[in-house]
Length: 527
Image (cartoon, rainbow, N blue to C red; front, side, top):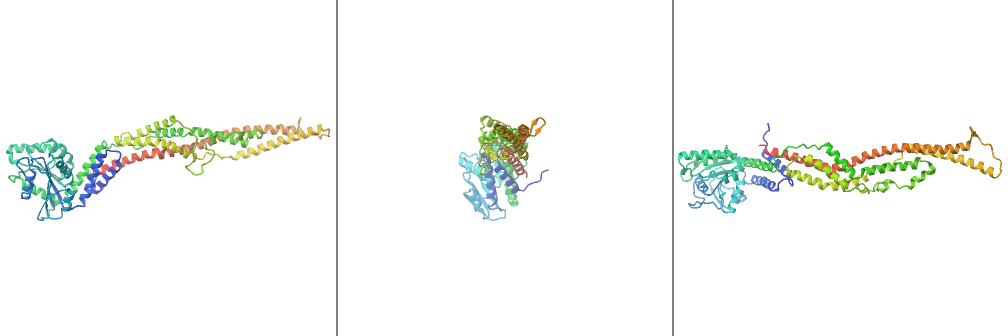
């Protein structure tokens, strides 16, 4: 069971809900509700010890006559033909209501002796006046006063306009509402009972089943003392303003709830599969597959320069770095300033858009239409920025451009030893050939089995170099694959971070805002 919440806390919760819904729900509704909250703040600062009770009704209901009867003096103008109230008239008991009446916009005022009640009685223009200005005054002030006394007459008590446009929307203010059936002196006793019963049923349908219904006659004075007593009791209680404000908060929160399609509960967790698909599509759009191919090729190119067969090793230096072609051969001078030349087309971006649509669509399913449309549009506008931003992030990523494994140095030394051995054998054979050519004595050459040692050195060095080069390139391919895997993980994290920052985090924030909106609205509705 939910506990009651203070008015201030409810007002703050409703204000928070309005802030969260700004730009997402109907600005007309949000403006009306914001006006209600502002009005409460202003009213609380003006004559807090005063209770404003307003008489409202249609033309001919006898409001003005009833006000005169309550006051005991003819202050309000009445007429036998086409009776109407053009300007609001206030009667206050005691002084100190000037600022409040200025705020309400009541031009005609009268004061009575202080009786300690703090009562301010206001006769409002007719709600069905033919003059738009009169209707506007009645509507505006009916929203601002503390207590509403609806004056109905036997002829128009069931008027659909009165019930649908006024009484029914104010059902949340039932605790500060009185209904008066005036001019009952025109009805027979049996008819009066029938009219009162019918009126009570109509009020119950309007959500005002517990509202007191008083029968009065301003002409004969019937029921006037009871009405005067009821109004005075409300005024002396000094709680009408708080009760009215509480009802207004409930009504305003219900307005926002209606604008939010009932603010249904939604699952705020993003689908892992849709999230994975978006990251994968963003990786493709950012050219990650091409970059990994370049990382592998560059690793092999650099390995060949370190462990390849020395006579042909220089050929690897003639090949341009695959990373250089992508402008990824060196780190940018400043983080975030690097750019690659990886070219992605509309197909890749369309894949990102499709994946984002799937993620956003699934995440926002069930949100109010305005909220969902805003979230989807915001996500779409961020997609090109998100894809473009990945370029700088990738340029900042460690692509292991200068990686030199220790085994490269070991094989490199062995390659030089093999090369030195082959050169020594070749030089030895060359010297022997030169001595024989110039007819000088040729020293005896050591033998290894049936082969001269110089020949063994030459052929063995060449063969060993080729074998070491082959082994080195086999190991380099394994190393290139591992390097690409490590870089791939880094790039994935980079892409995921970028997608999270530009697409997923804003979407999660949108869902968190909606959840907080629902919680705030629920708090505003608790009384």
